[in-house]
Amino acid sequence: MFERFTKDARAVVLGAVDHAERLHAETVEGQHVLLALLDREASRASFALMSLGLTERKESVEQALAEARRRGGLSRADADALSGLGIDVSEIVSRVEEAHGEGALRAGGAGAGRGRSWWSGLVGGHRPFAQGAKDLLTESLRMALAQRDRYIGDEHLLLALAARPGVPAEVLADHGVTYASLRRVLYGGGEAKAG
Picture (tube, one colour):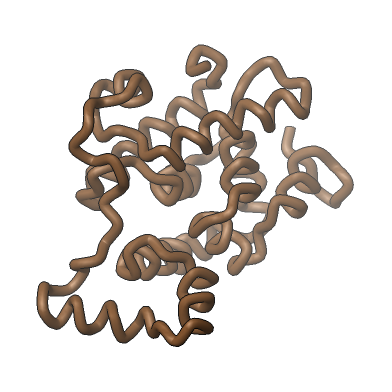
């Protein structure tokens, strides 16, 4: 599948690995893909993000992702659901950090320490991709096929992020970027269309 990735999509994957390493994450997650997408310039995904006003709010996105990492990778919706059951995630985070230091619950990724996957071999044997990130890459293929594209571009990665439930989609939506708005910008039906 990686051979179908455009130069921009490959750069996003490599950028995601770099973000995971800088953040000392054990695995590459969807949030690292989002951060790498925000780093891109002059690509279809960067055009879409700029058109929807996200590039000017990159710092806010980074802050929202950092807060989710602090909650152990729980989305705000997950924390709200737990709150409905009488579980105060903020209180738990505070107590754990009090006992073990700030950031003690940061999500390191499930499956860390197991054998490296073939995904990690594609990017030079660095951090392995968590199952959710692997699923994201597979979903980007589905997005490309749905558009009858013979390639997987960074726009397909972005669409897959917005379509999949989880922290990256929640952060995008909180910043006004939804799957529907991305499709409109990328494929028409709106004022701008990425070309």
